Length: 79
Image 1 (cartoon, one colour):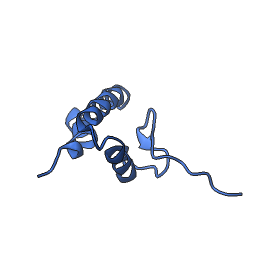
Image 2 (image 1 turned 45 degrees about the vertical axis):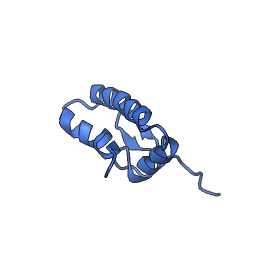
Image 3 (image 1 turned 180 degrees about the vertical axis):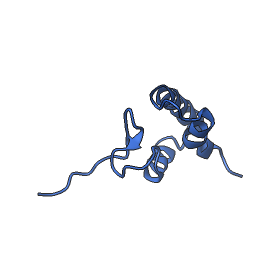
Image 4 (image 1 turned 90 degrees about the horizontal axis):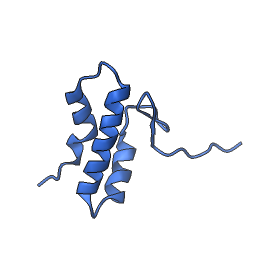
């Protein structure tokens, strides 16, 4: 039986990647998001900040600064 392709989406309430099991957003999710929002980085940042808020309510005891690093720091434009 062929293995089904799974998207690199977050699972709740653990906030791990459904496909690879690491902390979401994983590298594959980041690449997908960068491609999807390539013309509107601000919209991507707002979307991820919304997910970060949801995650912070579910990941009790996780330092908010670590969640900011995980969800948002990589979205900054380089240059």
